[in-house]
Image 1 (cartoon, chains in turn blue, brown):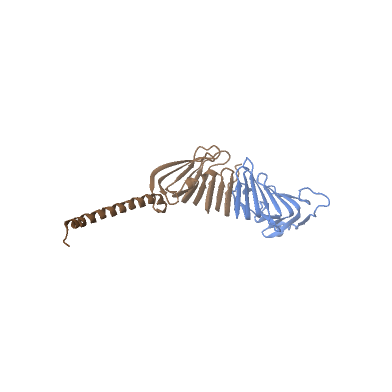
Image 2: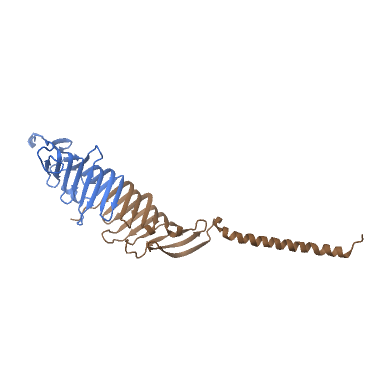
Length: 161
Length: 196
């Protein structure tokens, strides 16, 4: 949701280590980041800040687990997007969420997923609500890379609802 | 045997002489033991001096840091050569390397010549903005300060506010020289959105 971008960011974690020289903030242990309707969970969160004050977050999952994120979408009353991956990078300036390795992205209406994509790398622009999927964790598509699977639910036309 | 006056005189003179001799012995003993006692002042439990409305500047030869402790009342404990301070105010003096800081609390205890400063109850620290780091205000219930090493440590909850963020946690380690800062448990951080 666009309104999220000027909301404060809350982080809960077990431990925190801040390096004032490089201005890098590392949270570890049951990390929960919330910002407006955006909520992200992971085992580790590293936050850096650029001179302009924009924050860049990298969430890494505990071994075997997945880092997750969920955010409300502007598209309608109860529209949500959820994603999970081994590593999630969030660019606070461009409001771009990048999911690396075993990445999944679902769009939901309430709790009913409307469409879902899987791949090795998914990038989701939360402002334009556009996402692209590639089959290698590096972000480009290469032959022989992972498979991409997309399930797009039929749109039942608004009248029918 | 007739009672001779000489024996009587002897009897009369002898006891006082004896008393005198014993007395001087006793006096000698007392002065000797008193002499011995003064080095034994360690086993003394009460303080041996106190200063009121004081200002104590410590200059460390190692890092040539100077820090300043002021307070309502400083009491010296001879037992472990430590100082108890009421309403302490600890501040770093013009030390270019680290941002100046000011900490006050209700009570402090200075150990081994001020190398270790324990601050108890209502510890408040203020670090004015300098360089990239903005103004920081910290509160806790206890803080151990090692001024020579620019280290502050506590196992108690801390609450920190800067102009951009609010941070709470349990257990803190901060090293102003290396810029390290760690919270050991139950971390909760709130960061304001970047000004666009």
